[in-house]
Length: 199
Image (cartoon, rainbow, N blue to C red; front, top):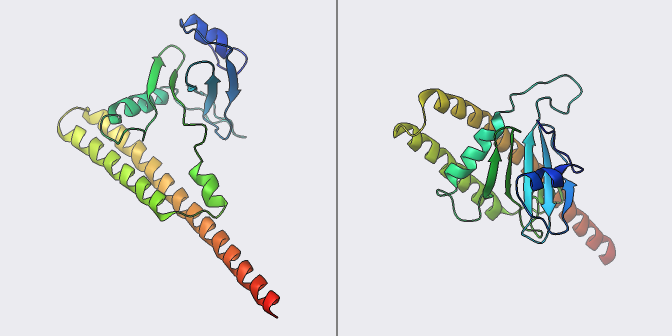
């Protein structure tokens, strides 16, 4: 098994038969459970993601690497259910190395978390996220009813998605409050400055 990193990713991709024109590999930070690499070359950029068996935290936290296949399968399953561009496209899945590749977000794309922390609160963005989550959950429930997902898998996915969505919604709530408070402070600061100028 290959533990992927920015130094060996090009050789790994070449062994898979991919021709890269002057490739540039950079590791995307911020995560503790996966190695995530951005691959840029003459072709459209893409992301290489590999699940870690041991999370990057202080205490020993072991995790089942097979979770990465549930993620790639969910992306493929939902690609036809959500509006085009809502999800990255899965390019390949590597069962042996617990990895998969997917299309990268546009270079000009902004992280919603960063926007909120800067005080840029947009209700329409939250509405779009809520709509996508609702369609996501509806598809999983319908797939279970039609027998497209086994009972055991459905239970595992439902539990995992429930935890994930609960954490996501809680994070959205906290980031929204942070953004709202920052925006409020900015407006108050502007008003106070205006009053001082008028005096």
